[in-house]
Length: 228
Image (tube, rainbow, N blue to C red; front, side, top):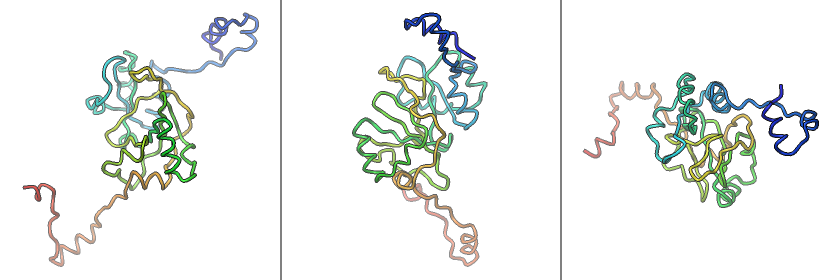
């Protein structure tokens, strides 16, 4: 199947009709029910949750939109009618976190942090202007460290309670979000997990029961108990 749009574009670029017809470009599916194909596939195949931002206006701190994040196809179709900018809700909700590399400063920090381990290249990556976004699966049995968004100069993590504009959205400054390497999202390597996550510690129910039986059990001290 070939694209009439590709043919028109070839003619606009100065190719003769014979040349344009002899080298047609494959048709690329860009939208499904007005939803960008990348958003449609990620929401339906990966379970990622999205919300939308208007084309104009402030985008920072849109906590209301973040609370509405969903992968419900009917809701996404409804939002798509306004041709919005699409944003991904990162964290355990979507099962993904993103490492942001801001320009050369962030790249240098990343090179120092990874110690010549280049596994971070083998995953989905996007870009907007000088910033690159590297996607990783949310780690099982781990929780994000408090204050772990910043992991180095020009290097930070988008995780719980965060969000990221997704291709083909534009930043307010005009930078277009594009895919660098649209491959499956990989698991993060230990060096990165150790920078941003810690193991989840769960109490062993058998130990709690033994403590209760022995009479040594005391109720946990909650933060509000200390404050008040």
